[in-house]
Length: 410
Ligand code: GLA
Image (cartoon, rainbow, N blue to C red; front, side, top):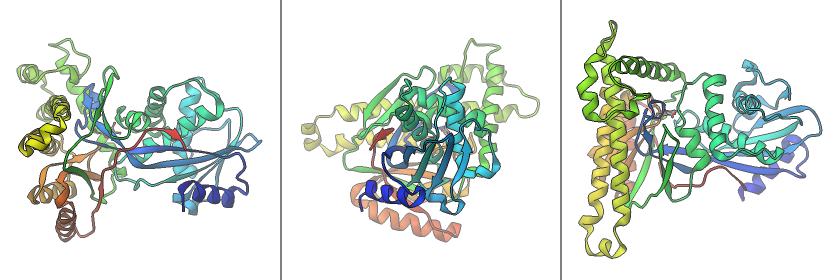
């Protein structure tokens, strides 16, 4: 059945009426490279996916908001007054859209009419493919259209980040919200998180595919570790600022870092702080390099491609190596991988037709990605799947990346 019909029927079933409904969508994202750089003022390189979150909505002529999720149907309808956006443990998942409404209101956008909204998410929860950014951004986009607010998609991303930081309590950067609000089919987004300047880069990978490997280890519980990494970076930055006028780690070149790193001399964990900064600085440089490589790959004309296969994969090989280095650094210096993600990457790299592999997103669980030749994808999925299950004890899931558009009405 067509998604729109399915959602309309479900809405009718839940709320008893489906006249005047409107349907909105926001994708999830996968990050190609540039991990844990966004809250350090560095670069990221994500793309939006075709899986995401649908929101079906209509005004209900009251001053109540009624939330329902097809993914959490057991929880039933969760209801609150339009004046009451405080965090409430009993509101479970609905605290995410409430967080967005709270952020809108903090920015002066008042919700003065009640509505019924039904969500349906196709992103596996806790997979690190940004299901939370997706539900927040779809809510922001939907309310803009419903109430005629004048903000743009970048502003939605910024408000969604505020919702995460100040309401949910995860001190994340801007990458996820930006990627899902601004994504474009066929493109990755190269984003400078310091200035928010960005570039759409065609994701032309020739005969290669990006395969997402979901470890099925949920990451939610480790959000405290995420916040810990961020504060380690902030602490290290303070030491560096004693000798260099910088606002973020993203401003440091590799040479500068190597020259001044020894000023980081924390009594408790100086060595650890240096490792964290090393990752942030080198990863940022790798991300800029990855952009150059993809751009030069895109510039190869189709004639070049026909003449020489070697030329075609040269750039992608470098891209793959950058992915591998990224993973090593996230494992050794940033320490956010863990047995599950390391296993996926190790096994992936042993497979034929693979140019690179790395964890993606926050880490600690969630997903890794690999750049795999299209002729070897099936074999890859079987081999990585089997080895992962025999070592870890449960299954991994695999998806071939299809890029999609950002927030929209459907
Ligand atoms: C999570 C956060 C992002 C980013 C990544 C790591 O996805 O939400 O802001 O920090 O982790 O790169």
